[in-house]
Length: 211
Image (tube, rainbow, N blue to C red; front, top):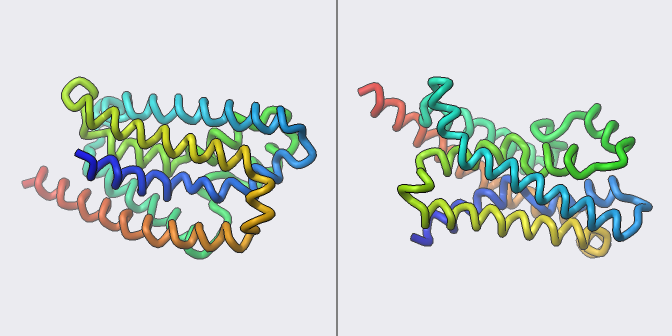
């Protein structure tokens, strides 16, 4: 019962990669008051939680309506996560999260909580795809304990993200940019291996369904 929630927690933590938000949040809120920082962090976390909850509850029915099998989405999701893992391993700026134009806009924006913090930094394409991959086969009424335990893992990762944003400045002084990149590379290696497993599982499901 605990194996799947723990595995999902590791995967989702690697995808969200809260430590990578340190330089981003610190730069976006540079010179702002403590109250503003806390308000933006809380609002971003709440908005991300709502987005992820919507995907957890309605993602699988949406795929069914669109005629997309879960196996096909596993393959796409695995490829997407693998590309994200490569960016993490090589410490490159993630184009799957935000573009340069979006970053420039965020610096001019008074409220940065929804864009770019909640989306695409916290609940970006990788996080949403991960939620769909894990919650897709589940039904809240048929597997309520597993569903709730997986979503509890989502909330724990979001809580970690919130705390990291609150402590962005002191943490940046301690670990610096190099520390952030090292942590990102470690998460990237784990995520890359899991992404390959998603692709393998997707092909297995596709061949079984075809057979």
